[in-house]
Amino acid sequence: MATKIDKEACREAYNLVRDDSSAVIWVTFKYDGSTIVPGEQGEEYQDFIQQCTDDIRFFAFVRFTTGDAMSKRSKFALITWIGENVSGLQRAKTGTDKTLVKEVVQNFAKEFVISDRKELDEDFIKNELKKAGGANYDAQTE
Image 1 (tube, rainbow, N blue to C red):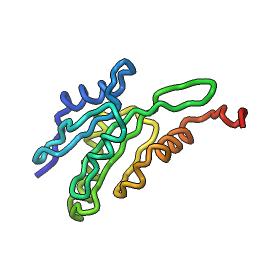
Image 2 (cartoon, helix red, strand yellow):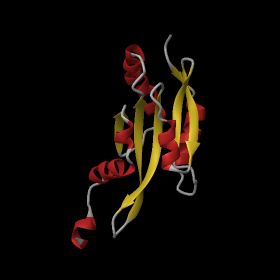
Image 3 (cartoon, rainbow, N blue to C red):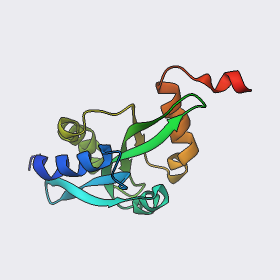
């Protein structure tokens, strides 16, 4: 059965994370049967990491505050989480289903596909976003 996405509901969740006045910094997009729908959301990155268990797969849109001494700004990451115990068929399908998610989640600095919780380290993700972000004035203060 072909996967579908609830675009309206997913777009609402996506916009909540994009809104700088919102405390929500992450949302997951999970499978409800063969439909991708908004899942959990939260205000703390550590709470997001708790969602990443070995037996599930989902997509997440996460806001990080990055920058340097000269400017702070929001950067966004699209994270595809595939737990270690997810079947090979589901793993393969996740890649094609991501195109549906990208119809809603269109603005992000970097995309990650992660299966190991160690790779979810906040500093690692922030550094990758910083590299993708262009000018870095931190070097002038070192």
